[in-house]
Length: 630
Image 1 (cartoon, rainbow, N blue to C red):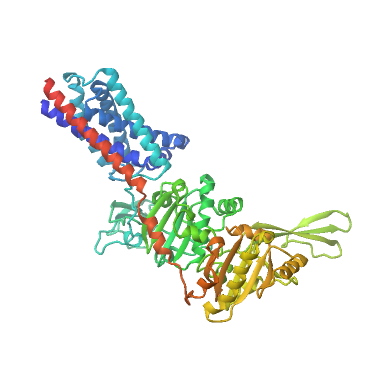
Image 2 (cartoon, rainbow, N blue to C red; image 1 turned 180 degrees about the vertical axis):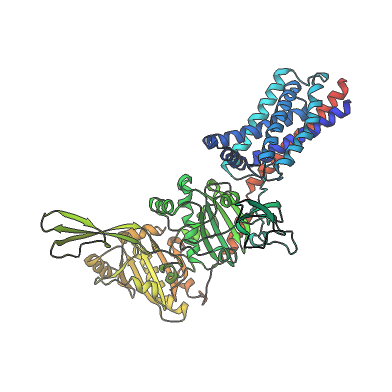
């Protein structure tokens, strides 16, 4: 009997610890499940307590399980265990009968059970739970009551903290179909020969003479159309077939086209921003994602896609308020919640395989990684960037949309009224046109070079020469002309002359300074050079991070070399520079460092395993104490 009680305590304790742990790892998943149940029973007003209830339930299960394993507060834990099992056995019986939600969620996403399977599982657990309850007084306490209560309270607080941590970040252990390492296209494949869904179809026919409606099967329905008239058909799923782990992944572009295949077949790295509800998403994180979008614009082996289930009005409102440079494609909200438990969250996908996943607050900052810092600090003038491509709208981008307001005055009344472009008065005898006003109703593509304007000393706009020039060019950008010294100028001036030798072809050199008109002419007279002096807007200097001087070399519209301040090479060093014809920064070499799991995350998992090991020792210690005491 004593051995049976021990085994019951260990078995039931392990089940409760497992059940509580997998729900504490993913409390948002449990909260979604509670919301489904509340809505199914027309209790939608209780949705607000779904998350607190999920945290409390998982913490309670963990504490009850740990108390059973360690032997702490046996009388209290036995009462809680029995009440817990009786309540949920009755509840799962009701759920099994009415089946409002197919998956009970009792083991989170780690183990999927139907409502009937959950009910019978509870019936089985009632046996050892009852045995533990009725023998609770046969075993002595391990510690004094105050010490055990302190342990129990510590267990509970630790469980709550663990749940909250998984909410603020991502689940420490991912049991869902979209975990790191999963290839999404492979997860959508249905194996050949897999069983299909089986339906039972009922056909309803009405007899013409009697008016009586009868039910028939697909094999015995009446074929005499002179006596019977078909009325209705009903199909009921009687046996569930094979369902692919990923069966509802679909992406719809803003224009309504299907982008799923394009995204999953992209050869390279894709940053996928997921925000199932933009209205409640963290605005700061949505704005930060713009850095990844800008990088993806510049390189052919990078792509950025943003997914949401929000309405088009909410999408446009969010883009306008946050001045987001990217648009959103549409996907199912349940799918997005399953992909990442964060709003927003970020995925890194390579050739259809998920290689990185982050919550919004843990989203990697582009300029914190080697290579990206070098690129972003000079954005949009990045090494290997094609200025021609960056200045053109990306595929699928929208133009600015304006709403025009037309003002007409009624000749008879003298009153001025407003009309739209579609319904303005055409009767010129009765109305007189006064004015028109245009308002931007939505923003489309904005080139990163919009603030960048170049003018010659004579006022000619030569910006397009920079963006579309296919020959070799060297640009020397001076931030503060008043602080320019002779030594720096001599180095830059010689550099422009040596550039032609390095490239092996004539190179047009420009000197960019934030001066205009007479000031620019005066500067050119003061600092004589073979370079052409060009005026650049002072605001444009804020786009690029450099202190005094920036030099970049272009060939066929692509930046092949870029240096700034102390990193600007001497003319002698430049003379040996080899400029490749098709330089291309390999995004993958740096992005692979993002695919490696964060070291801190590994340390947290190690700490968790250490805690579990200590609990196992406690279980053995309490069992040894019981054996000795008896």
